[in-house]
Length: 324
Image (cartoon, rainbow, N blue to C red; front, side):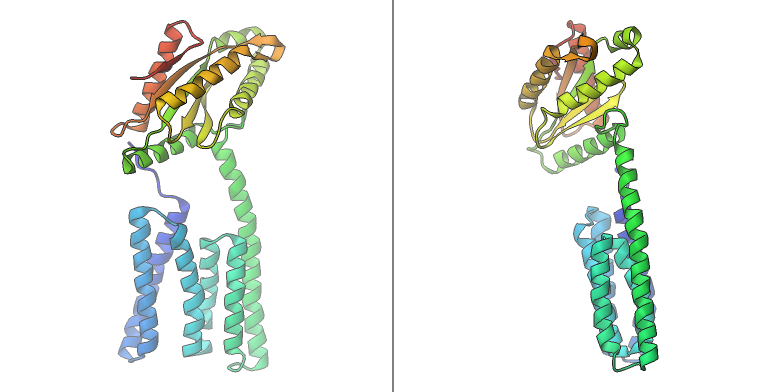
């Protein structure tokens, strides 16, 4: 089975934690030589946390807590360092703000940044003259607001692009890429929890080519849209519909064995058989059902469902068949 590629969030945390370690090590060495023990201890703590997060994310690939820990580390360590070492450390606030916006959602990052800026503003109030104080404060605020405006726009664009990348443009259900990601997720969970099982329901619309040839592709497309909508109405939690390609669809049924999934498959087959589509077209479907097995790949799993579906077609269509 192909290993799932690392997500953007994982790569960001791995990059930031390693960069933090590399940047802080020289300062740790310098402050140790200078016997500045308090700040050296602070740098050492930050390095240990960064290294720990790198190892944690690299091994577990879990970023939920890591991104929060790294962002809070930036927001907490910098005010303490400025309080101990004075205004000379203020330049570190800019990379700290950028890091927070890379780790958290734009709104949360802005709130955390403003909190940090407020604390640092209070610390520097008595250490800078009025002109220098307000210049520094407003330049930092402007930086935070500019980054927020940019990342918020990019965040929205990213959400739109992600939806486009995982949705079938015709029917609006998940596409093949989304299905592959889901299969990897289900198989990984199966390997971690041996007693857990999930099931695939592979559906093929019978003699769909004849419908396209006779009525045209516009009618065929409308039937696919209606079919996807019809099936989606039957699905419950942990059940998702994907378009595999052409007139083939797949339903992933998480945490249910083939017996329970077969009940759903039969309900869908009967529903389609009784439904009249555009131009009063009667449509039937053939279904293959395959329960996950611990030692198989996602392709093997999908292949068994496909073989069961072709067995249903060979037996006369409008049937459900369960894979061995």
